[in-house]
Image (cartoon, rainbow over all chains, first blue to last red; front, side, top):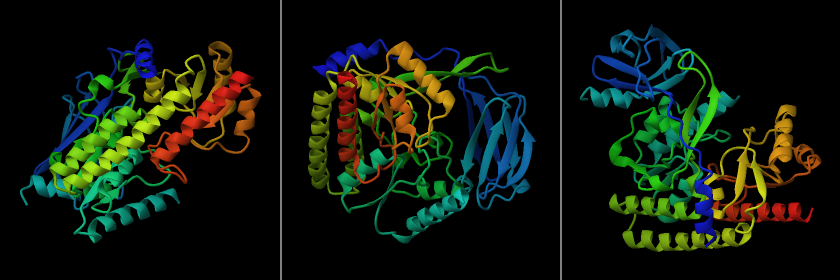
Length: 112
Length: 298
C-alpha cells in the first residue's frame, strides 16, 4: 500500500527531460584500412569543429586531426601504430567523448 | 600511485581472463549485478567486476586491455538506465550482452541537471536517467530475473539450480522490501538530503523526500558545501543527511552543528565494507529510519 501511494506521490516529483539537452557522442568504426570517427551531439547535430586525438594502449598521444565539417574523420591505420588498439578522443572545446578500439575489433573487422 | 594500481588491476583482470579457460566468465558493470550473478551461479562461473577499487563504476574509463578482457567474457551484464557510460563507448559483442533493465522503461526515472552555458546553444541541460535502479528491491528482482533468464538461455548453469537460487534471492529481496516498507513507509514528512543523487528509486518506492547534493564520497564537506546544506535546512526543512560512505572524522560533528541527524546508506554500486548486498541494504534502511526517529524526537 505504501508503495502504491509512494508511486503516485513521486510521479509529481520526477523531473521532465529538457528538450534542448545535448551531449557529444563519439563513435568509431574500423576496417582493414582506416578508423572512421563520427562525432555528433545527442540532439542529432554533427560536431562541425573539434580535435580528434588518437592514443595508444598506454594512453600516449599518437597524433591529432581536426574534425571534418560533417563531424567525421578518417584515420588511416598505416598512419598509427595500432597493434595495441587505439583510443579515439574528440574534444569540441565544450564537450568531449571517446571511443575505444581494441586489437580484437581491428582483427575482427579486417576478416582475420 | 593510482595509475600504478590501475595498471596492476588491469593486468590481474586480464591475467584472470586468460588463466581459467574452462570456467565461464561473467562480467558485471556494478556490484549489485555481480552479487546477483554470484547468488545465481554459485561456483558455476567466475563473476568479474572489472572496475578498480576506489573508482566510481558509473564513470569508469576502462583501458584497451580492460575492454579486450570484457569482450572475451561469456556474458556481460549491463545495468541499463544510463549506468556505466563506458559501455556506450566501445564495441561489445551483442550476443553476450544482457541489459538487465530492458523492459523496465516505464519504471525508470528521468533526470536533468542544468550544468553550464557555452557556444553550443546557451545554458542547457544534459538529460539523463537515474541509474541506481537496484535500490528499489522490486526492480532489483526484475533485474535478477533477467540475469537468470540469460544464464539459462546460454547454458552457463543448470536451469533447475538457477531457478532454486533465484527463489532464495527473491525471498531475500521480498524481505528487504517488507522491512523497508515498515521502517520507511511512515517517513513521508521527513526531509532527507543525500550527499549524492543516488537514491531516486529508494525514495519513490517508499514515498521518501530525498534532496540531493553533489559531495565527493568519503571526503569532508567544504565550507561552500556546508553552506549549501545549511540553506536546505533553512528553506526545505532538511532533517537527515544520508552519506553514501562512512564520512571522515569531524564531518559528522559539522553536520550535527547544523541540527541534522545523519546515517550511512551505501548505494551498492561498489561492494560495501564487511557486508553483502542484502545485509548492507538492510543496515542502510535501519540507519536512516533511526536517524529520522532521532530527528523527530528532537
